[in-house]
Amino acid sequence: MGLQFSNTGNPIADYVTISDDALVQIKTLLKARKEPCEGIRVGVRTRGCSGLSYAIEYALKDKNISKYDDVIVKDEVAVYIDPKISMFLIGSQMVYVEKELESGFDFINPNEKGRCGCGESFKV
Figure 1 (cartoon, rainbow, N blue to C red):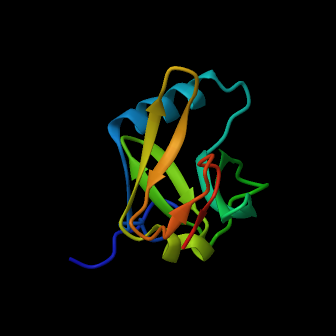
Figure 2: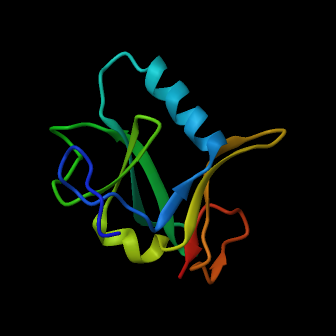
C-alpha cells in the first residue's frame, strides 16, 4: 500500500486513530474559533507526578506547526502530531470523554505503564 501523504507533503499518521466523538468536538472547537487555524496539534509535555502529559492546542501555521509534523486528516480535519512523540502514541486512540463534572480529550494508549492518581499525567 505504501505511505499516504497529506496536502502538506507530510506522511499521514496511521499509528493513532481519532474517535468519532473526538472528531465532532474538534470540529465544534474549530468552528467556534474566531482566528483561523489549520486544525489541532498534539504533543507531550513533561508535567505531573507521573512525568508526561498530553498537550493539545490549536495548530497555527506560522507558530507551532513544524514541517516535520505527522498529519492525520479525517473528514477534512487536520490533526498534527509532533514527530518526537510518535513512539509514545503507537496504537493509541484519541477520544473525547464527558463525565458529570468534567470533559475533555484523552488517549487510550496501550504504551502507558501507568497514570497518576488524578489522571493528569502518565508514564511509558
